[in-house]
Length: 457
Image (cartoon, rainbow, N blue to C red; front, side, top):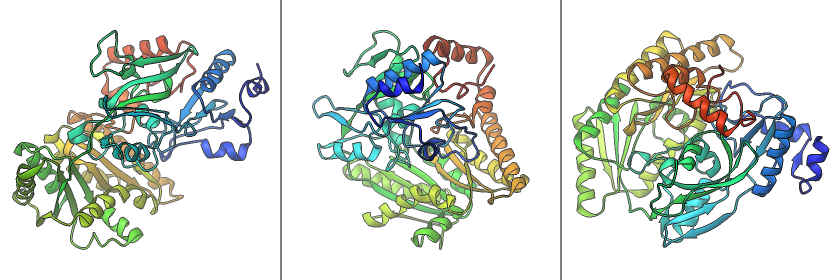
């Protein structure tokens, strides 16, 4: 079968062959992750159209790369040579929101924040909130098991996926999972799809669990004179027994970048900003907020406050979300995504500082600090190959340090292309063999995002 045959089997306009348009879909946001020119791009509107394309790819031996909004940071959506890129951002229907069962059924191209707004109108809440939530899609969130600011208390995407519809590596269109509150019939194949980055199936519909609308949050901000001191405060919060709804870290470099871009005036006094939130209702919540402030102060904050100004509090968290795009304006940013045990957070932050000095690399820091998920941002000037090489070496050093401290190579961005070597270091050979077995079973033709996630053997 030729591409012309495939084009005839699809509605007009679905298959894109124009090189200028294809160029928009070559890679995600992962700096320096390799990509190549695909054979074609498909922009389907139905699961059946995805199925038609996958069956054509099986018949022709063509690799398939699924893509959402392209906001990924690991290279998982990067095009392979002569592959078919299936772009799912046009499948944007919220098919159902059920207030009684507290679930929603959505197509993969639904933007995270759009789902959250639709749920809010019905008194419901979809918790997973990656920093890219204004742009990233639910399909991509599921594919990478995205986390976010509130996952410290409420969990990550995996905790909210009840079921998925998937086009498999054999070209079948199947439903996995359930709609009920409980269900243990068979293996958890729906859960297996979460975080698989398009290597085990292409997600064409997602059923997610919802919660009642969240209660108002109280915000506590603390300024610290060093990133290690702020890390010790994170450890102290965990030891205090408080479970914040968010505990975020932003360092001076990120604050300066946000100020330069948005003129928010946040970098005047803080070398490191630690932001905590609690959402426990009533007087208990007030007490938790005051306790959180005391923990900050006792851990070494040179200034801490329980904010009563919601606009001011929202601005602080907006700055946290803006940190990554603000740093991108300064030059290419290689984004890390390691996660370490809470007690290792201060030590890991100290190691990052030493790595930055040793590799002569500028490293800024943002973090979902409360659960140990750190995002060092490695910056190298444009067209400076030596600086780029140093940044890539520092990237590897940070992964090695995280593993030494009992951590993992990725907390929420996924393995993609950038973390495959790290994954091979993290997993025992017998566990890697289990990964290969699952991949062979579900993708026997090896067409689904081949060469990603699991290192080649």
